[in-house]
Length: 248
Ligand code: SAH
Image (tube, rainbow, N blue to C red; front, side, top):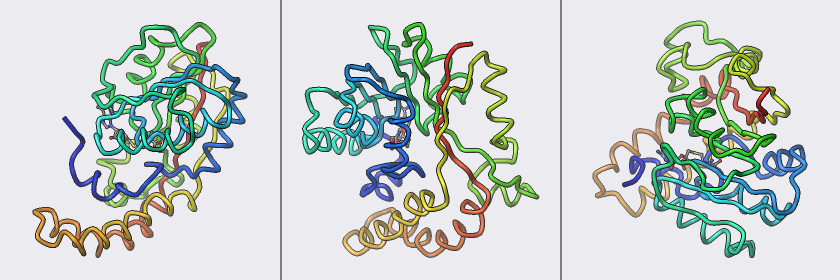
């Protein structure tokens, strides 16, 4: 049970598997006014950077679930490194349908909303773990600029323009689902660079020691095409943010 291997290769050196930087997670933690003892779950917790740093900086207690064995191992190592292994737990597994046994204060899915079939389904899943008055965190892309053609959307690795909304529409959509948007922190192009450009050096280094691997050809092709594709499409058109929601 794992994610497609290509992600475990290209993102093996990432601490954060989305366009957020450590500063953005710190901004979000402060914006949410997290208190010591706040209970958090994180579906698709990746390498655990959000939970580990919030445990260190705000004293939160958390559980993360992630389908990547590699990322989950990295999360556990990070928790040890930051001295928070007694506050955060990382589980390797499928977060589909995951509901916590006790009601928690903050329920997050930061950049993995396909886990429950999209934003609406993921909010529905998260709210089942949430105490009354708790906060849901959703990390999601939006169009920073509307792609002029479907080909441009495909260049951004979307299936179609309709995959994502513009920011005002995305915010309105949370209202239509019955939630107040109570905070948001948005990624910027620098954060996108950290997420995307960091894959290039990782791919290059991986190729040097794995030239006979069955994925070597794909990784080589990606290393050649990605910088230009990213600069032409994703960097210009895609936005990304984490949105904090409370039941209206
Ligand atoms: N929230 C993390 C990771 C976001 S990337 C961060 O901010 O760094 C998306 C993550 O979802 C990846 O770590 C991937 O392994 C995980 N994932 C994908 N499908 C999943 C599933 N069905 N259940 C749990 N995790 C999943």
